[in-house]
Image (cartoon, rainbow, N blue to C red):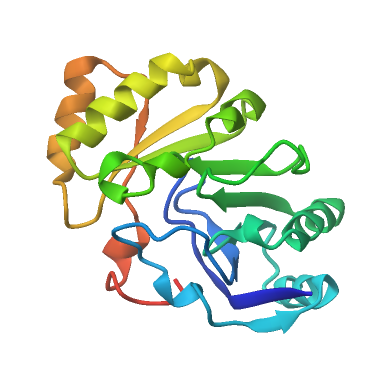
Length: 212
């Protein structure tokens, strides 16, 4: 069984899949407590589902793109079986993970979107840097940046772990903490080979809206 916070159909707001219709399976629980989090409601609340029940719910939306997210989905080990079975049934599966849980045994068909936590998130010591050795070309690493210190650290980590050669790299702002123009200016000034992204859903709907 898996504890599920919500299952909903919306537009993918981030990653290289931004703008595409997507079914989100938000699992309950997180083992981090970042200084700012837009899904604190997923820390504890949820309903028990079997893998088969989740898949049946997902099928109702007639959408091939699925994201397993949280919270931190890898806290529940059964999430790996869910992703495998979704892949077996022909879905394109994305995993949103905070980067502090091992990823090496996740089904290779899954596109991993992995955070590396910056200074201002308060959880940088939890980053599991060994995960960078298991990234595929199709995977993505995301840096959510709130300060200049965050940016300079992220820029250094790019080089230290050779991330541009391993996967797609995403830079975004902490919503309402750093101006998008500021981060874009830094990226262009340093000629970084990264993809800037907005949290699209927070501009379409009110930033506090759930289920989008």
